[in-house]
Image (cartoon, rainbow, N blue to C red; front, side, top):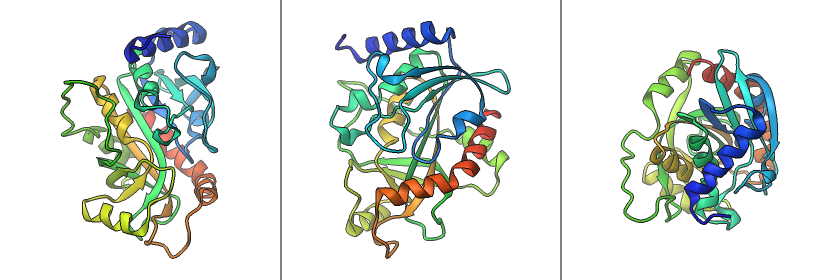
Amino acid sequence: MTNDPFELAQQAADYIAEHTGVPSHDIALVLGSGWGEAAELIGETTATLSAADIPGFSAPAVQGHVGTIRSVLTTDGKRALVLGARTHYYEGKGVRAVVHGVRTAAAAGAKVMVLTNGCGGLNPDWQPGTPVLISDHLNLTATSPLEGATFVDLTDLYSSRLRDVARSVDPTLDEGVYAQFTGPHYETPAEVRYAKTIGADLVGMSTALEAIAARHAGMEVFGISLVTNLAAGISPVALSHQEVLEAGQAAGPRISKLLAEIINRI
């Protein structure tokens, strides 16, 4: 296997093209906790691949994520690549593995990258099950997917055009700044207060590194979070991964329908 992350992404894209029969995709989605049902609603799945068979991918290590990559024909005739196999930074596989899906999507032709996640909310008005658009992020991982003298402007990383598209579907959608911590432990109340002080509205363990890689690849980025719980110290209730899964399952049909409608307007 090559040591060049972009060559590996191209190999993965070539494998996907060969085994799906689709030479190029228009849009790609990473479906995080709670968002999995969207794949069924955005269109007709014409091919499903096991992630573990594709160069550079592996089976997901986190409950709530599926280990497949799908090619979907959307209702408006676009080709969507749905990445159900997300590698999190806390898995210890390195940043290249974390952003391999995004780079593969770019190599497969996708011009739009849709990043979803389940996360903690710092706004007490955002009850579990609330979808929130990502307007910006704080990368608190102390690392980057970019290597060497690779300078990329992130001024408008999360597309305002795509957020407007989302609000054309649901004008009530709120937006906020997402902070990526490394995990896998949840944040302490002090860390949540710190994140809020420096501008965060949402806290989680994904998305920011992927968004940087997507921008570097020239993709337009759309991010949306599902608030699965109030962050530590905001809620008096202790945090658990089971809570995240349950909130995602409860909100799944509603938010997946929302995302499918957004995708079909992009």
